[in-house]
Image (cartoon, rainbow, N blue to C red; front, side):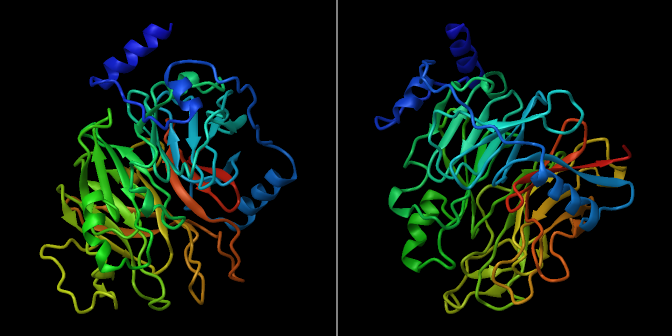
Length: 417
């Protein structure tokens, strides 16, 4: 069995075996060699009781969705952030900004999760915010300063021991001296070119100019891409402040991504961004621009580079546009095909709070985009957050999941059921 799995993994990668860093933790080294770690216990999250009932009450009484749609509690998942739905539809992996990745399973297919437990409990994760899947079932998890690869996560996740490898070893995603608690929630996606794309938010509100060469070289404040064996790393996207959501258009293959913009410039500026990238190496204007065409004070005297790309959509200032996904299912009405569903996490530094809702963006044949609210009500009339949507993912039946890291929950939005 071990040889069969190793052979399958190598064939799927179609590249040299992934090397292990000399300072790999013992458990990762064991898992990379298909050895037992001795860890036998999972942490299970209760799915019933008063906590779940409280969330259901909020969904029923406060959250609105368009006619014909309904929103329901799918799972209780502490600190739920970015989601990755397994290609076989068996399990959804949910990242956090803490030290756990959760595996969410709906065993009886009643469209409500039956089990939520921690994934790979023998490993110590550090801000494992960004799980993503390849179409052939390889799971990648982007952490603060590492990217791990799990070649058969949907097969192994039932056991505490899982096959695990470094894609980018600890301390090699960014220089260790650039590690920060701020803007360290990475996200990843496998693109139509079969490469792994990882966003690298830079840690400052506006970075000092002396950091620019290093950041451009490393892709900090950008998006990098690399081959699925960890080779061929390059900077794909420049001029981003802190992107925590990206996806590829199902037909054009173009990369679209959200970006959070500069704080402290006022309640209504600068706007947030939804961006469209049509070629490698494009620059989206930060730090010369704090969002949209609003110049930053720190770079006001600097001449911006030529051929900068401005947002496809300018969003409400400080609403914190985060996770997003293109809709490719058949459950929703036809107008939603190839539309973007995205989460506005909500403001933290605005006099009057905004956001805390799910948005939908429609894109016409020329690539022009129009965004509007889809699900809202998590920000009540008193300015209190009843939840903070973070990411959107699509299940195989065509419904969508919304993660909420304040409530610690996943919601399912369906149509016509």
